Amino acid sequence: MREELLQYYRWLRLYGYNDSHSGNISARDGSCFWVTPTGACADTLRADDFIACPLDSQPPAGASGDANLHRHVYRGNPKARAVIHAHCPHAVALTMNGEDFIPPDFEGQLYFPRVRVISVPYEYYFEQAAPLVADALKQEPLCIVRGHGVYAWGETLNLAYKWIGSLELSAGTAFIARQAGTLG
Image (cartoon, helix red, strand yellow):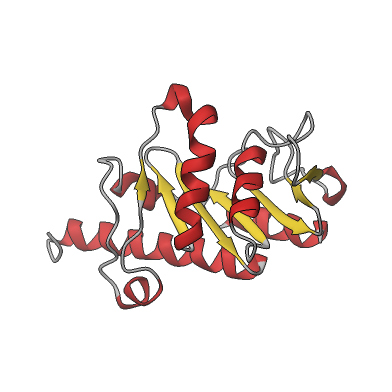
C-alpha cells in the first residue's frame, strides 16, 4: 500500500498538481491510515517514510499537518479508502473568490456538476478546516478550500486521483475558455 501511495504522490508532483513539497495523500488500512509525513518532498520520499495514524486518536508527531483532516474524512465517510490533497493551480485560481466551481465541460458536469468551495481564514486553517472538509466529503467526491487546494476521497487511490485530475482539467478548460472569450 505504501508503494502505491508513493507512486500517486509522485504523479501529483509530476503532472503539476503539487510542487515539490506540497499536498498530501493517505490510504486507510483497517483501523489506521498511512499518510505522508509533514514537509514530505515528492522527489525524495520513500515508501517506508509514510506514517501510520490511528483512526481513534490524534495522529503521531511527524505526520502531515493535514493528518487530522484525513482522519476526520475517514471517520465521517466509511466508504473512503483514500484521501488526496493537491494544490491544483487552475482549480484554486478560479475559486479565489469563494464561489463554488461549476465545470463548463462535459466530463466535469458528468462527474461533479458543482464543486463546493469552503472558505477558512488562513490563520485558522488547522483549527477549522478538518470538520468542514470532512462534512463536504460525506456528500461529494471532492471540494476546494479557497486559496489552498483540492481534497478528494475515493474507494481506491485511483478513484481519488481521477477526481483530482478531472477537476484540474475542467478548471484548466474553464480558464482557457475565459481567456478565449468563449465562456463568461
